[in-house]
Image 1 (tube, rainbow, N blue to C red):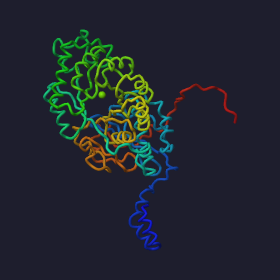
Image 2 (cartoon, rainbow, N blue to C red):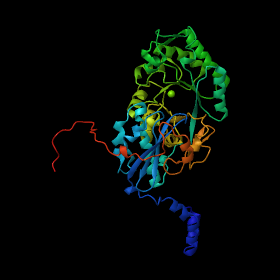
Image 3 (cartoon, rainbow, N blue to C red):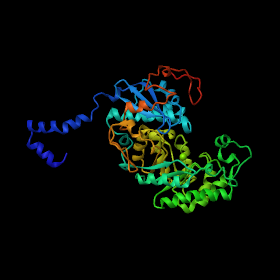
Image 4 (cartoon, rainbow, N blue to C red):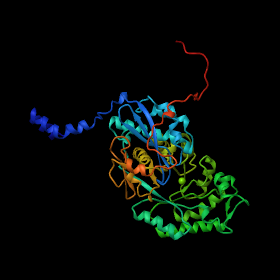
Amino acid sequence: MPANRRQLLRTLAGAGAAAIWADSDLEAYQGQVNTNSKPSDLKITDMRIAVVQGAPMTCPLIRIDTNQGIYGLGEVRDGASRNYALMLKRLLLGENPCNVDKLFRKIKQFGFHARQAGGVCGVEMALWDLAGKAYNVPVYQMLGGKFRDRIRLYADTDSSPDTNVMAQRVKERRDRGFTWLKMDVGVGLISKIPGTLTQPIGLTPREAFMTPHMFTGMELTPKGVEMLAEYVGRVRESLGYDVPLAADHFGHIGLNSCIRLGKALEKYNLAWLEDMIPWQNTELWKKITDAVDIPTLTGEDIFLKEPFIELAKAHAVDILHPDLASSGGILETKKIGDAIAEYGVPMAMHFAGTPVSAMANVHCAAATEGFLVMEFHSADVPWWEDMVNGIPKPIVDKGFITVPNAPGLGVTLNDEVVKKHIHPEFPGYFLPTPEWDKDRTNDRLFSFAGAPARG
Ligand SMILES: [Mg+2]
């Protein structure tokens, strides 16, 4: 309390002071107590799902209900099955959601790389939302506080075979205020032009798509490298060199083609080359990173911190790129950012969900010192922001999201808007899920030793 305020209260001791407190401070202090919630007695009673489509991805939202009327929102990673979350329900019923780390460790064995982690991570977001609502604090505060008030976004931009259209799309995003851009540069742009791509005769697009890059036998010819570089060059020239421009979705070409293409792109000063080969191949990534003088980046499909640390320690890529809905949720992703920063590696954040998952990213980014930039995939979805309330609009303002101060993740659902965008194959809005309440399975990660403990 400021000294002049203390003095004033002393002077007005008695009835006068009480009147002053009643008007302002008392109200504020009462606001700190969630009268619906007694955190120590809080228990999870239900988990329900609503699957949104066209955000632009398909995104299953999670709602975890409690015995005290407050609920937590989370989101399974875009494109993943809602069942990855529902299968965890039996492990959560009756638990206190405020024990976020304990529950995360209980469920984390049911996650794996990429979409399979979507359930574990989505539940973790909802637990943080609940803990924040129970104690009336924003999630970033429970992580140790903020390093920044606004989170910088990069705008993803889908490819067009027409360079002028592509340049226009990227420039339009910059004109809307985005301060960091990304474009797709796939071999699909040139694959129909003779003499650009060598590939085994009869290799179907599906085979090429499903086979890891090093095993397709696809290599760019010098003409192919030149045409792709020219494509990027035209976009870069038209945009100018002052704003970061990253590139992604190169296609499943071999390692040497990646290096030749990377070298040809050096003069366009790209912000990064993304996922040129699978993240699992640390040594191969290092070859690309050492050969090409543009930052390299991977990580959107990694679950848990250990593989990130391995990549950072080896300096196999220049930037790591967890998707919080695959990497292990809010706390694990902060741990990732903190661990890789020790090796001088910054954390960009992959993201393609609704505002619920966006807020999980925003709180984590706010609380992680080594954060660089977060993806925004929904620049062309006009109703994206309307899905939530309880946060100042526009949520995305000139390429940034302001970190919310409301309890938990800081958003509530706009039921009407979300209901309009429910996936027709998965109808219903947070319907009961009693079929997921119970199961019988022995999920121990180590063997039973036999001898019982002394009673
Ligand atoms: Mg990507």
